Image 1 (cartoon, rainbow, N blue to C red):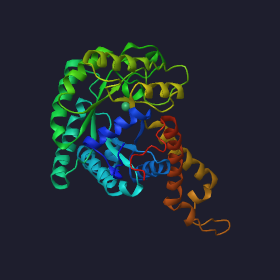
Image 2 (cartoon, rainbow, N blue to C red; image 1 turned 120 degrees about the vertical axis):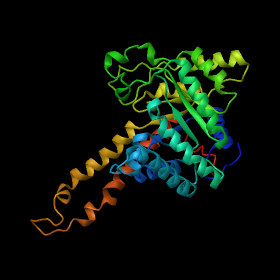
Image 3 (cartoon, rainbow, N blue to C red; image 1 turned 60 degrees about the vertical axis):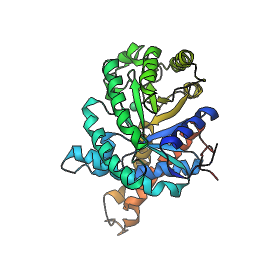
Image 4 (tube, protein in one colour; image 1 turned 135 degrees about the horizontal axis):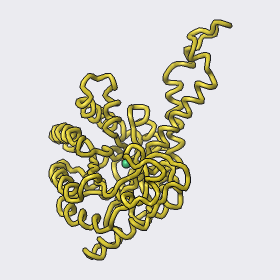
Length: 356
Ligand SMILES: [Zn+2]
């Protein structure tokens, strides 16, 4: 595999990177970020592990990037997304790895957010000859398959000239945020398992248009649940790959598959999923907890610095303890540590295509 320039990858290089994942039996961690602290921590982890990485923003993350106090929340989601992407474009090459820039779930209600990003992305492309984002995701999995796929086709047509890819979702990823959250809902709910026939239909409609990846559901859920309530069935991924390969005479694992809800998943099932062509695993809940628990521990260790600038008992100044860089850094380091584990689980450690 040819060496790539460090920095943001997209288009043909992005597809080359995904092929390298499938050939090399590894997947990339895709980490949700909400600001410069989380973005930099993700790039630091990628650099430490010589792993390429995917940085992604949800609409809420993009809004937070712009500032929760910005008056027009819809505008904030777009300009925050642009700001985050610019931050990554400027810094990624200095971390010496390949970074994929991606947006997370957008259902029909959020299409105006994607429209805004595509518009900003077209202007960015004109000026810089590269896309603002490597790919966007549409999650229309709650809708009828025909509606889901025809809208995905329409958007893929729009972004192919910008050298972008599209991630789609077939079948529902469970979890509180998705309305399939109770333990009963999760118990062998057929909605949580994608039908291989649906994947075949997506392949036939979308592959002539451009590059796409599929978040296929195999019982995965967003968030972390009590052990025993989540039944991962990665063989669904295998069946989908085999159906497409057999029908269209392609090589093995023709589809680029995405594993949503990676937080808290069993290592053996992750391993199995990678073997079936999973090239991206989303991690959000576990890195959120990593950040929070480290900041919590820091505050617990030095509680008086969070109540007094100068200690009333002994006049001790606490400026060097409450300086935000001190406790935010603890959060960043903890995210890096969690991502060391993710790179190991996904076998992406040492595999960066940008490595010298
Ligand atoms: Zn997801």
